[in-house]
Length: 584
Image (cartoon, rainbow, N blue to C red):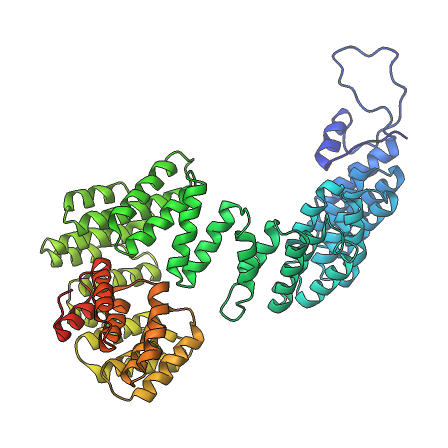
């Protein structure tokens, strides 16, 4: 019998239109010469088989799906047709019968042992059934049957293939054993080790994942896979991962990967290093929009308004050349709000409003209205700004939370600490407990001079969320700044550092308590490193004071000048200069 391809039952039903479904068709000789307009019907289709397939499809669509599956699978075996084997698998899937689907896929593979498609069905069904150990042989076969040019890509998708299995450790072990022949071959070692590393990482074995990343990089130093894996492993608890990323970055990295590294540095609050990476990206690939946006945001954070404005406008220029989409829309909204903030700082309120008017994304409504409220407050219309924020809709609990945060920030920026405290106290009286809001309330209590209330709230945060490092740092710094309970202050700050060892502001707190305890040399060492990592006006204030106390007054004044350029409105810096009677 000639091959009769059948993708789905619809094809068969279309062929059946020549005869009523309830009447079993009989074989008949073809006419000697059919008219030109008569549709061609496959003459090699045996009438009995035709009827069997038709009945199988009808049953498959009704309550007798199991019978339909059996009829189609039997037809597949009779014809040896891959399309019918695939159809049997599909019917089993529709009936949610994994075992039946596996039976059909295995029958297909036995009939066509060189068919990679049949083997992949077997592999995927075994994985879906959580029969991980049984998947090793089909996995080996899949790799053996793959085109050598495509093998790296096949290895790359393996972690996704096994992503839903319940026993992640077993999956990592089985795949590593199945890939044994590829882990040492120059052409496949890097993607193979990367796949093993990702499966180890999914199993919680980060040290093993890092080892795999190193092996993958050793096999192919310029490969992106090991570096991306190491980038995801970057964590204060696994600092060795960054060395893998750095080795790749020091070569000729993809701009996208360098950008990802810059983001990781930002997440670790290593702003100066992130800025260096962004400068390289914008120099090497100036048409890459995201780099300009992140660079502009970072420059604005550092109060480098002119540079930030140039970067953000460059981003807008590039982004507007791209196709529309959610990411582009959110990026443009962020750029417009940042430019509005720059104009607001220059007291050009008309331009600040004009930038906000360009925002079209409704998801950024709260942020846009917050900036408008800030503009009103700067013009002496604080109450109007608060009304603007309170008029925002509350479709979800998150909307309500953002409204509270926006109003509190507006009041804080305008030194209305008591009003901001009252707004937070009212919000925090309602469940569920919001640790960030409770922390903010504590900081406002400190601004109001209510130190017992500040400590009470911070200790409430610590008790409810022991890893909330901001609370330990805030209380420790407050004690150190008041020069009281210094051993306790140091203990609190050191505990904060265990949760965020790269945070330059916590390092600043530790240096300040060391200074208060008379350890000036240690305080200077810590502050130098913190200020290098994160040039900030408050850190500059402390670094300058330590230098001043050590007699290095010229350098102290230079640091203070830099601090004023960073943020001339810093309360800490202004208080330091006033107390020491210094005019830098």
